[in-house]
Image (tube, rainbow, N blue to C red; front, side, top):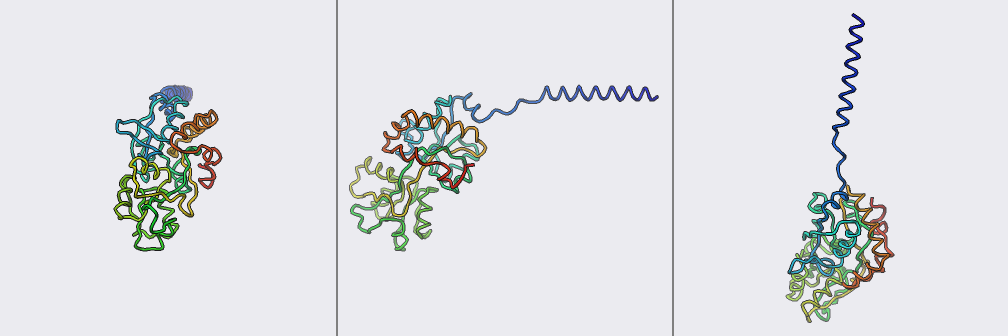
Length: 288
C-alpha cells in the first residue's frame, strides 16, 4: 500500500513538472516597448499647437515649424521616418499623452516644474522670450503683466494652458481679467478691436503674425517685464522612459552635427540657449 502511494505521488510530481514546463513554454513574449513598436510602424503620432513659428500645419497639410521639424529629424535618426500630426490645445497635450492619443508632443511646450510632474521632457530644443501684443505706440504703457493687474479695466488674452497664464497669475492679474483666446490670429483681431488690451504669448509668435498679416496698428513688447527666457522640449508619457532617453541621445547628435542650428535658424530661433540650458534646471530637478 505504501509503495502504491509513493508511486502515485511520484507520478503526480512528474505531471506537475510537465505542466510547469508546458506553461513556461506557452507563456506570451514580453510586450513590445513603445520605441520598438514605433520603429516597426515607421511612424509616430505627434501633437502640435499650430502656433507658428513653433508648430504649424499648412493649408496643404504639411507639418512644419521649429519644434516638429526638430522632432522629425531626431526621429529619423532613431529609425522612425514619418510623423502624423494632431493639433491640440496646450492644456490638453499632457492629458492626451496619458490617454495615448499621441506618442509625443512636438509643439514648443515650455518646461516648468508642474508639467515635469505629469510627463517626461527631452532636453531643451526651442527657447524663447514672452512678449505682449499691444496697440501701436503702446498708448497704455503696458510693459508687463503687473501693469495689467494694476488696472482692473484691462484684460489680457492668453492661450489655454500656456505658461503665460502663470506669468499673469504671479503678477496678480485677476481671473476676471484673463480672456482665453483660441489662436494668435483671433488675438490679433481682439487687440485691434480693443476687446483686450494685450495678448501674452511668445515674442517670436507675435512677430510672426504681424509679419504674415502686415498689421501696422499693433506692436510687440518683449521681453515682457519679469518673465524668464523659457525653453521647450519634446514631451513623452511618464511610462516611456526608454523612448525619451533614446530621443535625448539622438537630439544630442543633431545638436553636435550642426543640423539643429540650421533648423532653428529657419524659424528665427537661436540654438545657443537650448544648448546651454538643461532639463533638470527647468524642471527643478530630475525628470524623473
